[in-house]
Image 1: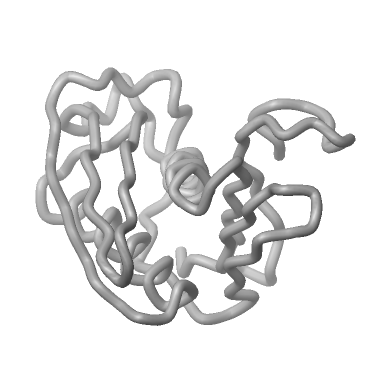
Image 2 (image 1 turned 180 degrees about the vertical axis):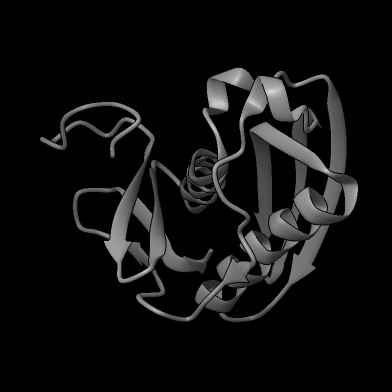
Length: 149
């Protein structure tokens, strides 16, 4: 599923889902690694519910650190899943900054309202399956992994 149709040569940021057995893959594509991470997190929300139904009413700050960009991505997705689980919130906007090995971010969202958000599944965490953080020749960044649902 593409948030924005078409894959052509456009450099627009977007997220995608891809199938993987009983789990689901999330992929973020952007102009920068930060933007790809943001889009993948939006794709994570879309596994649970329609991101357009989530209002960015509260902000939560998170940080993680890892010298490997792929493992930093897993840490990032797990940090978002942790906030969803412990705070019982969903998020629809993300602002990521990466400096060296450290990621800091703001997650914008609201408490889960089952009737309004109609969550479909519970995401348990990121896996190393199909994990990739790639800067391609066309200038796009892609960050992806399979999440356990």
